[in-house]
Each structure stands twice: as C-alpha cells, then as structure tokens.
Length: 622
Image (cartoon, rainbow, N blue to C red; front, side):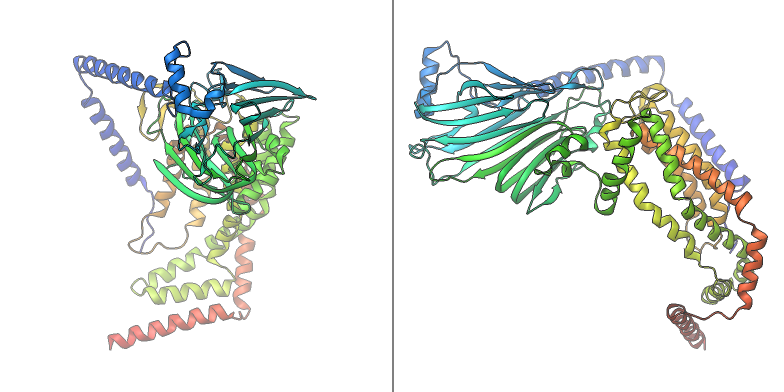
C-alpha cells in the first residue's frame, strides 16, 4: 500500500476548507441591530453575574450567630444559650499579630483568625495577597457540655491577652467558665516566619465537657483568587494532606466535588497555587473527613474564589481535658520557605509531580534553576537551563537520529518488500524483520531514546507552572513568567483558547512544526498499516494543539519549549551535516548483512510464531 503523504492536493483541500469557514463566518455575521440586541443582553447577563458574584464574595463560609452587645436582652439570651461560657466578657474587637512577613488579625468572637495577609506579595492586580479575609474562613470546635448544650467556639467570645516571650509574640484567647477555668487558643508568632505555633487546651473543664460526646475540629476555607487566569490558578489549587505515616494524598483538583476520610493525618494543606494555608499537628488527627468543592466553571475576570475546602476531625479527651499542639502556616508555596520546616514535612505539599518525575523536579531542576537565577535574570536563567538540558540530552538525540538515518537507508528495500508482498501482510512482516535483523537495525531503537527523555520533559512541565521563583518575574514582553504572556487582547473569547493572544506559545508551535518537518520524513519510514490513520497528519496537528493548550499556561513553560525545540533543530542539523554520513551508514549496513547474524531467544520465538501462523494460513486455504 502506498504511503499517505500530505501532498499538494491535501494542502489545497485544507485551504479550501479554511476558505469556506471564513466565508461562512462573514455570511453569518449579525446585522447592526442584532449586534445591539446582543450587547444589551450580554450587559444584562454580566450585571446579573456581577451581582450574584458580589453576593458570593461577601457571603462567609459559615454563618455565625450575631448578637447586639448594646442590647441587654440579646446579651442575656446569649449567656443563657452558652451556659457556663457566659462568664466570659462579651466584647467585639480583634487583636493583631504581625512580624516582618505576615499580618494576622484574630477576633474576640470565635478566637479565630479573621484576616491573614502576606506583607511581601501582591496579586496580579497589585492588591495585597490575602489568604483569610471577609469571612472566607471558619475555624471552630464543636462540643457538648455536661448539661447537653451543643456549642461551637465560633459563637463564643474569647478574652485576648497579648504578651512578649523573648522575640516571640504570644496571644492567648480564653473562653472562660470561671476564674482559672477556660478553653484557650494560644498563638505564638516568631520573627520573619510564616509558621505560627497554635495550641488548643482546656483547664478545669473536665466537669464542663460531656466526654461521652466527641469534640470535633472544623476548618473551612474558600480560596481567594490571586492570579490573572482563574482557571489556570484553579488547576494548581488543591487540598493536599499527609497521612498514614507519611503518605501524601490529594483531593481532585478538577472534579466538582471530592471527599475522603483518612486516618492518622499529620497536616492539611489548602493550597491556592502559589500560596498555602496549612494546619499541622504534632500529635496527629486520628481521623479526618475532607471535602473539596470546585467553584470555577469557566474563565471569568469577576470570579473571586476557586475552591471551597472543609475538614472535620475529632479530638480526643485527655483526663476530661483538651490538649492539642498545632501550627498554622500562611505563606508562599515556595520550597525555599517550606524546607525550613523539615520536621513537619510541609515541602511535600508542593506539586512537584509523582514518582521519579517529582524527584527530578525537586532535587535537580528546582535547585539548579535557583542557582542560575541567583546571578542571572529569570528569563535568561530559563534559556541557559534549557540549553544545558538539551546539551546533556544531545547523546540521546544523536542515538535517535542515527536510528532514523538507518531506517532511511533501508527504506528502498522495505518499499520493495511492501510491494512484493502487498497482499500477504504476514509474509511482508516476516521479510521486513529479516532485513532489519541482517542489517543490525531495530525499528524500536529510535523510540527508546525518546522514552528516556520523558521523565525530563514531564518534570519540566510540572516545574514551570509551580515554581514560586518565577512568580511575577518579567522577561521581554511577558509580565509574569508564571502566567501567560499577552501581546493582544481579543474582544471575544475563543473556546479552549481564551480572550488573548500569547506570543511564546506561537513561537513554540512554529519551532515544533519545523522540528517535525525534519524528523517526520525519517521517523515515519515504516509503511502504515491499512485502516490506520495518517500518523503524519496527526503529528502536524501537534503544533496547533500546543498553540491552543499553552495559550493560558505559564509563559516560562512556552519559553522553555521554544528554546528547547530551537536548540534540538540546531543539534540535528549539526548531526546531519557534520557528524553522520549516510553513505558510511549504508556501507556499514551492507557489511552487517554479510556477517552471520545470530538470533536471540526473543527473535527466534517471534520468527517461529510468524512461520506457524503462515503455515496455518496456507492450510486453511487448502
């Protein structure tokens, strides 16, 4: 069967199809009146969406009971509801804990963090990065008292006491039932650290708690958007947790809803792409019920939240009291920062990738890029790293190209076999394998080098979108190497592409196209089987697919692919023009054919199976 090619007729066909699509587009353009009506309808829809989003934005994760402290009746009703905890003074207000990098605000109502702000970072639109703000988070203990009241600390008032312990700031929040009897949240903040020690303990409450009923810790949070593309950010927003003696697991980042119940949980990370809210515990949660709800349906400039997380974990009583040593981490998802807390293993919450890919990313590319970017501009560091990676892989490229060159030399013989046995697929396969065996050529030898490169490519695919070092670092026309670059804003949105044009993916797609032009002719030498799709045509689609897929991805990743393919093209040109000689390859193959070739066990078995199949086929004809 003649090999299918993308000939002039195919090209004309594609041009005609494109022309017809353009014609239909202009023919079906709406009239000015229809355009005005569409604009009015769109404005109405956007106004309703903005109103709904504003409602979602201001809605807290969980409603708490509010009371008017100026209303004596309301205060009396509150004290009646909370029973013994009514002893605590009811006063609204917050207390600030801050150091050089982190700002926390803790409310008297609930004793919980109601604002967490990063001092050194801003969002894509220059607003300070908040992980907790405007009621998007809730932390509470739910318990039953000895007189069968079901209470939540989110509804209780705590009395604050701010002190200094050396260089550390200590905030004690106490919900009292009497002098010397209380439930305490204790926060201790160290200088220049994102990690805050957090202790929950009770004193003198062994007769207040109903110890036959569980105390349940609940932690809810809606992830606040920080990036230019909410869909892209949401792709790397995920609930990650350490459980079962060190296993790292995750809830789905793409499902609308995911839940899991785990045992022996050490820490929980509510990751928001480049920033994380983490709760770690020294004496582990025996069990934890975890949920993740996706709040992003499509790309939107107005959407303010990505995912909603929740955790429910029972705490155990110790002599009728509660004692739980924990840590809050509000900060960047940056390996340089998280590695400072090796005893907690928080760096494992970073999505380096699984298996060997994650190992290469974490221990090779991350420190290597950190080293390069310490004395080079961030974009130049990517270029240099790409060049060095491609040079390191050049022997693999050489092996692959050598295999392709051998296949090219053998193509005339293979074509003769295909023509001679075009009606006998089994015989054609047997004779083809004989030619390869005598010539000392393996059709798979070109695939093995490509497979060896896969761990490198996948590791880098995970490195660029998740490397905190690239966040908001400009290069050439790209404002942020961790987000997409924009050279043109579209007045409309193209499905699977977006409302903008990114240049780096275009350059990468062009480089891939020329690379495939160089390799397809040699790598596709084997005759296609009847009924199989035109693989060459499918490979031509790859640059187009990349153009769409990477338009919303990190520009640093597209920059890498552009430089990588450009270098590969130059390496292959050097191999073709200055290193390999096809005449010498042909002469070597002819010499190999003259030498007796001993079959290995696998080759002998394959030959025998083919011969048996051929005999059975002949017997069936008789």
